[in-house]
Amino acid sequence: MVLRSFTRVLAFVGLAVLFYLPARSRAQAVAQTPPPNPSTYTFRADTHIVLTDVTVRDAKGNPVHGLPQSAFRIFDNNKPQMIASFEEHATMPAAMAAPEIASTSGTYSNHYLLHLPPVLNIVLIDIANLDMADQMYLNYELTKFLNEQPEGQPLAVYLRAGSGCFLLQNFTSDRKLLLAAVHKAIPRFPPQGREYLTDFDTLQQIAVGLSQLPGRKNVLWFSGGSTLFALHNVEALQYDPNWRGLYDELDQERIAIYPIDARGLMVIFKPSATHAQWEQHLAMNDAARATGGQAFYDNNGLKEITEHFLNTDVSFYTLTYSPQNLRFDNKWHKIRVAVEGSYRLSYRSGYFADGSMRGTEPPPKARTRLLAGGEELEVTELRDQPIIFRASVLPSSDASVANLEKPSGSLPPPPPKKGAVPFSVRYTVPLNALTVREVDGKHQIVFAVAAIALNRDGSAVQQDAQQVKMVLREDVFRRDPNLSVTLDQKLNLTKDDQFLNLGVWDTVSGRFGSIEVSLDVHKPPKH
Image (cartoon, rainbow, N blue to C red; front, top):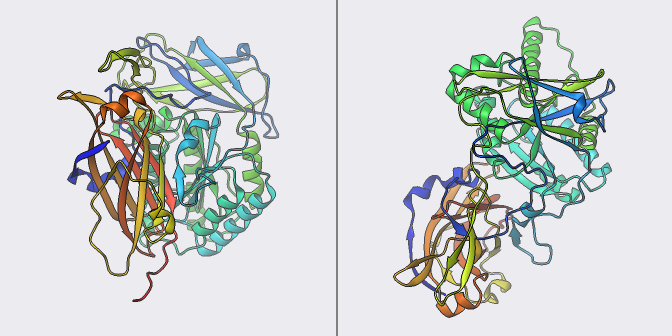
């Protein structure tokens, strides 16, 4: 392979958003096996499908198993609907490996996306309204939970420290990695200007950040009280396009919110403070009801809450139906589910009939492509499937960097920076994850890479994004069209850079992949 040209993409200055927002292009890409999704439902293009996950619990809060489809009834604006599909989920997922490749120091991958469990659990630590003492108690409770809970359930840890909501630890079953993430998150001083922070921004970032993950996502949202997120009478949201868009996105991505008041049981003597706390808990209940979750407050047993939730959250039922005589009038449709017996149900409260319902696109179609020399290659439209790749992140002074094989291409290094440590990043991307086009009789690929360094508060402090064009050697490409492309990038990092987001973007198909790396940058030696 020969690197023919590369140009800096000025529009990528704001690429931080792209690390959480995979593009949805209809362009066709070279075939790659998509990640298996145990909760995939096939919808016809000419129908409109409503999908809802229903959690059924008994009076003690324990999940109820074995209910048949005949026990469920579902209503759309009080009109009975015919259940199109029915599935019970009750299997505890197996242990999941950490995203890091254990055999190679400094090498990371998003290969875990190919082996996700049917239910994903996210711990969101929100310190916007959480004082230091409450943070220390939450740290103690989560530490006790992770030390006593056997490995099995994979978790991810997010932190909301200010206006940003960012990933501390990707999905892993390794309790040591999760403990390190919790201890890195809290305790810390609450952000300044926190009275201006809203739940809207937090949940919007969560919705977009989890959009490339399939199946049901449960967010355990530990906070010091919530601001208004969703009204119990959600019809009021139909006049606010911003809230409506957020609500629809949470719905379409199957994200259930479980707000947990990390302040525990409080004794308040001021009537104004009591009223404020009551409003916070009301908002937490509304958020949970609107998304099919459950709110927890006035309870000091944060460890027990987390433990019980993770032991029971894999038990739920998935129902789909096609609304009869549906009109896209932007009006709110209330969903009501009834089950025979005395049970407590949790499910999404409804949807907006605004044309954004799932099931309006056809499934991927395969076709045969003829290559030079008469070879045939099956290609398919993968659209939202993430690009699976590897990346090694090491100080340039590391001995293993000099021993790496010659890359397919290299980006120009940045100028030296005082107080910074040079780092080397090598991207290894499967060729079959990128779109190969024939231009002037030669096969070429065009993709972009980007690296964004974040500080301890999740704020982007530097970014380097560039577009790359490579022309493939015909003899190599015809011999092995499934080989990998390697690209080297140099970065100047400082001790304040604690996280690094790496992204690969196919500029033709719009497919995207990202890897999050926790950094430990030492001070440069004095000369």
